[in-house]
Image 1 (cartoon, rainbow, N blue to C red):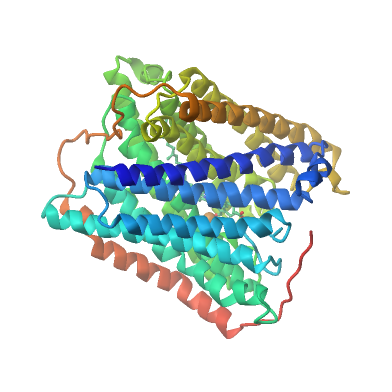
Image 2 (image 1 turned 90 degrees about the vertical axis):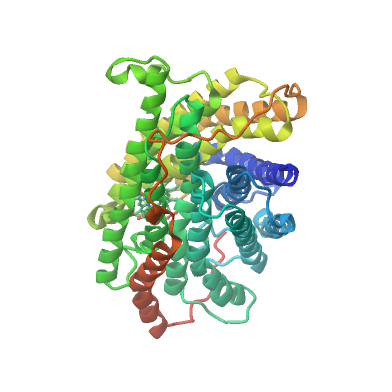
Length: 544
Ligand code: HAS
Ligand code: CU
């Protein structure tokens, strides 16, 4: 029934993991450069001209390309399998993939030819070739089309199943896609009204403050667009994989609604230090940032409780004995559980960021890459790797090549990431070491930094080992694996309470209205103020 969906998902996931491989190979080079081992001159022969070109490729491929392709593929798979219905318009999904892939190819040209050393946040007045902005815009447009495809399928399913509650996995996937539709308005306007005409020379200058504000309108909820698919797996699949049930499905549904409402109206926490935005609006966004911490706390409680149910069902006893009883020999489980544990620490460093006063100390320091390698680089990417351990065998029809390699990969990621992120957090907090900088050649570098730079380079090296283990395993599975002799089903966790969720948790209108209203309140006046002061005078800079 799912031949088209499975083939399409295989393409999405395949492109995602190839992008991730290239992007991740550049990561350790950065940590080595910081610790004094600069391999960038050697990379000139393959066209990488500078640390900044390497860093841009790393950020774009890992944070934007890998995530978006994986998520659109995974949510297509998850929604259709959860609804037990093939997609209503398969061609819509094919079109989405074609548009996204065309966008990727167009973006790749300036990235590889050193025409876009603007890093993954592409802050003006740094300027890239037009193809960079046009290509990325197409990737986003393709992801919208995937969302439309899923909404068409869901509305067909609803007609066929009147009065039936949407299953959790499909429900949460749809919320993620709708949240994405709302929040990408910011970057769409930034691209179409500012960056693209500016890079084409149609307008002489740009307004960096407005561009940054539009960027973070999308850039903050982008982190929840990354996170929610991992949460879908932690709530909807992981308890089943662990041999248990979901502790509370209504609570899970509530936390997804809260993410729909609260993901977007708080992007100014990335702009606390920006001078052109009135302080009162920053304060409002700070309060809203602390509100969106709440559904993550619900998630922590609910997912850990679900795993406790599993551990006890497997015979675990005592306060912590259930943890040992969990299926630690299964790579898919282990990767996701370890991802969750490290994500909790990434959440804590996010809470520090969200405090206006602390942010003045932490902004633009190495603390930030420390924070986001625990969140998107581990909570999300490592969970996606864990999902890959069952999804890639399912899609390729091959048995996973080696469980042992999978377990080694998971633990090396865990240890490597602890070392790297610990070093980065300390460098940022204690020594104000700047982020986005080739520290190996920085004249202001201090000897006090060295132990922590080495710690994070050691972490980066262990992560490289983990990457090799991952790709050998995935590659051998797909190209040399044994044919599957059993059917792999998508794991679907049962609700421990066994009762349907209340109807108010299945009604879209109030939540949607709330989401749009809060965005208008939190952003409307800020954008209005910036428009009244519009200043399209900044020229572009190409520094590297
Ligand atoms: Fe953040 C900057 C605040 C979450 C990503 N963040 C960034 C940047 C990125 C990023 C990429 O307020 C850098 C942007 C740039 O390049 O400039 N962030 C937060 C807060 C949260 C948060 C309050 N961030 C994330 C997530 C990300 C992410 C999620 C990616 C996926 N962040 C900030 C702020 C900045 C920032 C400021 C700007 C800093 C600056 O000055 O530039 C919260 O949402 C976090 C809540 C999460 C928790 C953790 C809950 C724990 C759970 C674990 C469950 C356990 C399991 C395991 C499953 C409180 C859910 C169980 C296993 C067993 C065996 C038992
Ligand atoms: Cu944010």
